[in-house]
Structure formats: structure tokens, C-alpha cells
Image (cartoon, rainbow, N blue to C red):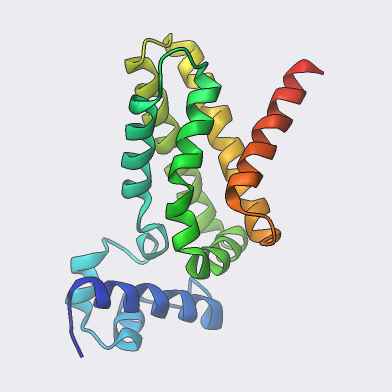
Length: 186
């Protein structure tokens, strides 16, 4: 069985998720995860800096994709329209990992340490989106507000997509941003 590369990374992620669900996050060590995945602890740490990051793998790819889509959006769109377009373009990243995303979100929701990490990751994502909007000429104050609000809407849509898989993520994104618009018009 290969001990490194993409296969080992996927096995580590699945082993971590399984162990966290069986034993709980706090009662699972990196060594436990490595053993379950059939690799040594050194291999675990080659792939992940700590046991929390196993559940947040792909965040950097999502951030890079979203900021690229913000940069590539056509001129003339409002900041919120740019963000919705970027989120819709990046939806495939979440859709491709749905079997992992669903139990991952449930675990994060019930584990304070993971919720804290999720909030920090969300803040970093919003900051990256705000910076991308600023590079498009959006004023910093407006970019920050749009990015944080947009990220909250994206997160809301993703959770609704997990809860209601009959409707695609794209439809949930459109609905979340429509609801956001309705809130501002109310």
C-alpha cells in the first residue's frame, strides 16, 4: 500500500473523520489517525500540521479559486454580484467532496475546537475576498463588508445544500444571495 501522495492523504482524511466520529476529536491523536490510515506518524505530519487541519484540507485551493474568480469577473458588476459569481464558479470544489463535507460539517458543529478553527478559516477567507475586491477598485470598507456578508451567505448556502441535497449547491447559492438582497430591501 502506498505510504505517501494523494492516496495517503485521502486515507488520512477518512481515518481522521472515522475516528473523530467513533471516539471524538479530543480522544483521537495524530498517531491514531496514522495507524488507522496505514501510515506512520511522520507521514501524517508531512501532510498535515496538526489533527485539526485534516478536516480543513482544500481551504487554500478554495481561497485561490475564489480570489481568481473575483479577479476574472466582468467589469460593471457590484461587489455582491462579483462574489456570487465567484462562489457559483467554485461550487464544484464543494460538490466534488460532498461525501467528506457532510460528516465534516456535522463534526465541526459539535466540536468547539473545530468550530474555533472554522471561524478563523472563515475570517481568513473573507479577508482574502476583501483584498481581491479591493484590487478591483472597491473601497476597503465596502469590500470588507461585502466579503464578510458574502462569505456568511456562502456558508449558509453550503449548509442548506448539505441539509437539502435534492437541490444543487448553485440553487442554494442563488437563493441565499436573493434572501440577502431581500433583507437589505426590507
